[in-house]
Length: 109
Image 1 (cartoon, rainbow, N blue to C red):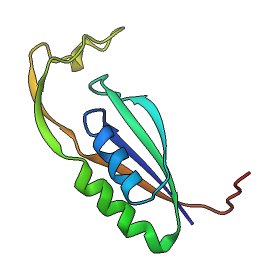
Image 2: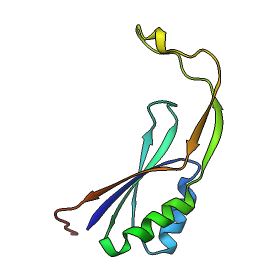
Image 3: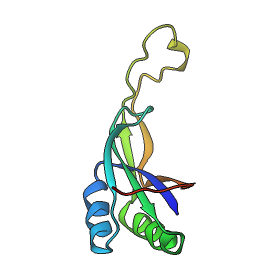
Image 4: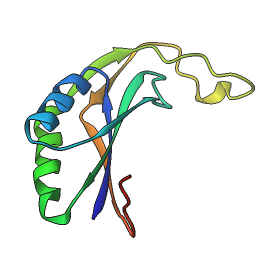
């Protein structure tokens, strides 16, 4: 068994959730926040058998799109002024960051 943890942008979350349901894949959604943009994300925790792993990854790949977005970084707290960028920058957002973990044991009660 595998545990797939997919961090997706909030804009992609409804489409991914709908596509997982259509495929009969059960998932748990968690609200999360990215460290760089301080923007909302959704983290999906998906337990799946190894023979369905590629199907799950394909669903994620098709549901989550990367895009360019202009953002103004927030001012840093403390004495980290040397890394602060005071003007808007174009960054790539969206898509999915996916971790696939081996599951040693699974119980369902």
